[in-house]
Image (cartoon, rainbow, N blue to C red; front, side):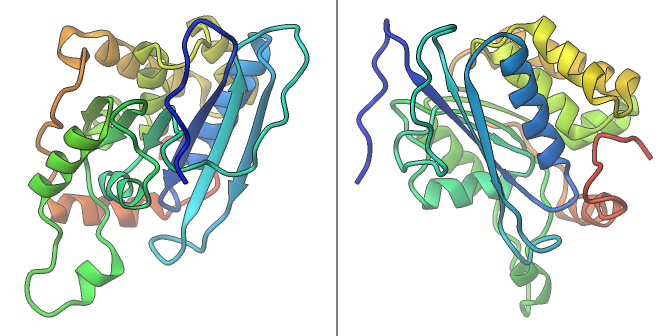
Length: 249
């Protein structure tokens, strides 16, 4: 059963889901978000379902934030509800497709912030012939399913500037206005975490500027992503430290 659309004008629980691929810093990203929300005084709760390495198990992080400060805290949920998701932050493009297939993304409600690069699935690697999922299909699905779409190659941008994709995506979340957390609180959360602070703040600034640019306004189609071969190289690179993405190599 799907939940009704969120009502505006009254306190509500905002829900945010991060479907991560192992090694891309989804855990650090979720911690930054929770810490920033708490620093801003919002009652917030985060849970995670760890997977197994890269592409062999689902790794998801779920955050709920109550938009009223100082009031009685609501009962938070441990898992997202299909159709009731406010924000999806996906560090890899196929994860957007997975969440659409599971019914979490709603055109009436969900802001999707994602990187358009690919890390090939096991099936795409071992199948006979060319089994890579068409990038155009993911683009069409994301554009049709999301209420608002901010999609760009966060991995390529991060590598170009010597930072990490999860920091860039955090900046895009801050710049999107999809959550009521202040820019200052996000910065403080990065500093308090103490992980590659300088480079992660630089990545945050990149995502912030991109999300605030006119081209990111409204529901925009995703730009072309990096090639599948480049995505495969990214997968091998991401494996260097699955628990500490956010630290430049």
